[in-house]
Amino acid sequence: MRLAALSAGAGLALAAMVSGPALAEEVTLSFLIDNGPQTVAAAEKVVEAFMAANPDIKVDIETRPGGGDGDNIVKTRLSTGEIGDVFLYNSGSLFQQINPQKYMVDLTAEPWQADIQPAFQNVVTAGGKLYGAPFQTAMGGGVLYNKKLYADLGLQVPKTWAEFMANNEKIKAAGKVPVIQTFKDTWTSQLFVLGDFFNVQAAVPSFAEDYTANKAKFATTPAALKGFEHQAEVFKAGHLNKDFGAATFDDGLRMLASGEGAHYPMLTFALGAIQTANPDAVKDIGFFALPGDDAAKNGLTAWMPPGIYISNESEHVDAAKKLVAFIASKEACDLQTAAVGATGPYLVKSCALPADVPPMVSDLQAYFDKAGAAAPALEFVSPVKGPSLEQITVEVGSGIRSPAEGAALYDEDVKKQAQQLGLPGW
Image 1 (cartoon, rainbow, N blue to C red):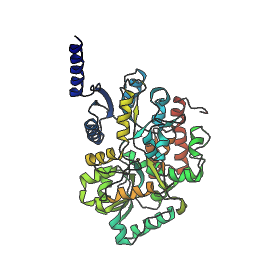
Image 2: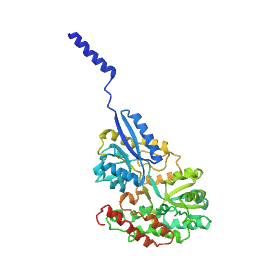
Image 3: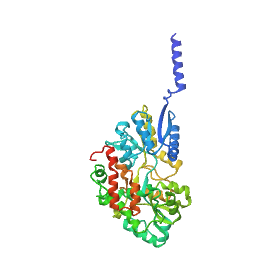
């Protein structure tokens, strides 16, 4: 009997040795993203590599619409506990509006946070805690310009508004359009105001905080009023294309690519459209930040990428943290570049862009590489934003309304939203 018992025990031990340690239980994570083609392509590439490296974790990607419909879905699913494990959503003011302290896992102590750019951390922080990792790349709001035209005319990239206007005079004298405007697509009219926020903040560091508290206004803060004034100034100087009221975004890119126009105030996401419609011109298009009064304080107004967050309702927080850590890695940046190309700077310090990126991207990256030369746009640091700015800037940019009147009208425009948000002081 004793021999038999020993033999049975030896058999079990041998069986254990042959089969190895017990397999970990497979975990399935849900990952909710928007349905933008570039978002989906990048996410699928990253998730595929993550699952290959973590065979005990399966990730199911689910898509939702972008824009207002997507906002409503995220808010509803957070409130009903159905957001899933990991989800992608805006950073900045929209992030603040979904109550991260109530619905998200605190990621402040995660080791990978040391590799995240502070500019991004600022827009996923609530109550002193960090809740997100960046996904995809940042954008710049400033001026796309034709580098070939600049070289032909011997122009230098302007660091002040005076230099910008002097360049415009030379471009006009050469028979070219100095500043392209495309007001048929009204959203394209806002860059002189929205892209000027770095200069506003440089002059009045407390503007965003005071604006949110209803203690500062565009109309009564000289530095904030300048965006409206600059828009009016280029119109008054006759620097716009003659068809600025009927031209579209696509028209603007065509004019820029052909060299018919020199400057197009725009977000750098336009690179994708240029690559599609005018691929041969990509090498000729550069970017610079909207210049202000002081060359020494010249810097970029940046649009931050969305964040990846973990729901407090997740039953698999440890696995979810592994996925988010992977997304915040250099390997994930490289996978995104392989999937959709390099369209802007990553907000992960160890990530690098390929050497052969388009000039627009390398120009944008230079601002992020210089300490203090890039700051988030106002909409990432204040929840106060009115719905009618694009109509107002069309009027100011067409000479229909004065800059002071436009700024005052926008101050009135934001009041309703601030009151709906229940912000103190409104």
